[in-house]
Length: 212
Image (tube, rainbow, N blue to C red; front, side, top):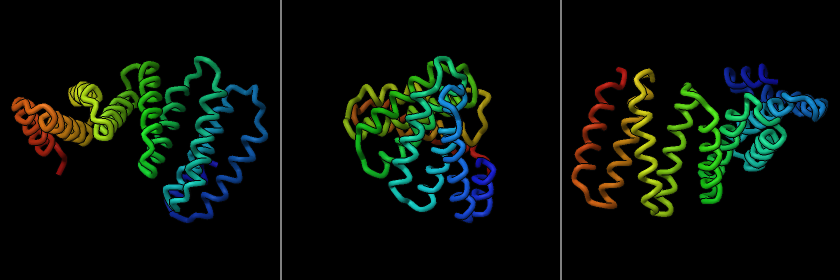
């Protein structure tokens, strides 16, 4: 199933993706609930539905993806190594639905899931990605609700992300740009000149380190 999804990603031919979904659904149906890694297979099925939603824009595919990722989280045994990834997959699917519908409850759930996943992870590339995604989700919620606490949390997390010395320049530049945007938003909210000065500094740094 995953191989067929990869073929679809390379070729763009929808037949590969449709075949992958058939195969993955059969695999899930034949897998006993007692198998610890059934959660991974259900999440792979959710990935397939997400790919088709991204390609065709059908909301029923997105709902199926969310259902699969939620099931994967629900049946994963306590302490399963994949739990942070399963939580992140569900958060990503809910982010897509929020972007499609604007339902703030989805964004609240995204933030809750990403925080859970972060608590389970050491300092790894996946953790860095979660920090970045969570910070952006908090800024999005600030823009919807106007709660300055969300913006403060976003700025703190973006500072942590931008200061990670081992991330690539592209990622670091994106983090600095997002930090600059968040500081600009706080300047607009509070009016502290230090925020806009720092925002300009980070945005200039982001431009300087972005690869040619």
